[in-house]
Amino acid sequence: MKTDTADQHWNEQWANIEAGSKWLTPEADVQSWAASLTPGARILDLGAGVGRHALWLARAGFEVTALDAAPEGLAEIDNAGGVKTIESRMHALPFEDGSFDHVLSWNVIYHGDEDILLRTIGEIRRVLTPKGSFLGTMLSDRRLPHELAKAPGREISRNTWVFDSPGTDKMHPHYFCSAADLLALFSGFEVLKLENREHESPGSFHWHVTMERL
Image (cartoon, rainbow, N blue to C red; front, side, top):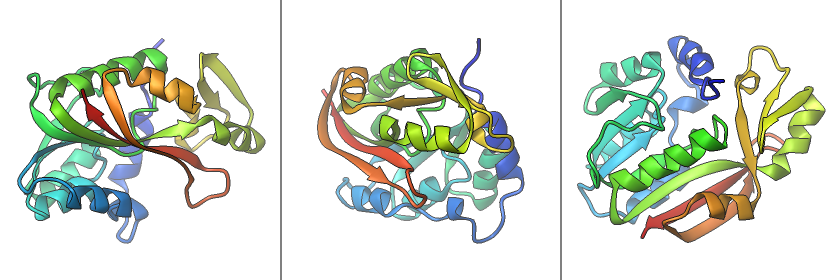
């Protein structure tokens, strides 16, 4: 069973993106992280969407590659220009070992089951240089009861859920985890920062992680 299918939903969203959308505004966490990086560093934006981070990072002077499985989002980035785009799955990155100094993946890699997630993390580790950093988010298991209160759901495999929520990406598999699960998944990384944070809607808990490749 294919579980990394959420790009189908997001491709439709990116095809109809409207001016002023929150998906066009870079996160403050990403901007703060970028301020700590060496100017001109090579950054992979893994799951770049319509480029809110990739385009901002490129304007800030970094060498940015934007990768996504949804072509409509990449088309928006291409229209803006200045960033190399690649259409690919997150668990099979088409890059040589050590191709990037840093990897960013914001609200992306939890779209799939544990197998997809482990393969994706392995690929992130592979394409990073030693001591390269990873900034990303994961879904916290603290969020799961809030999702179940909104729509019926079922666990299709360990920590992986789908919900009866038409018109949203929750129809596609999502992975929810504890801190212990997260740390076990990210073998080969040193944790620099780990925070369980509620986003704009009540109960929308995400893990915010900053790690360094060993």
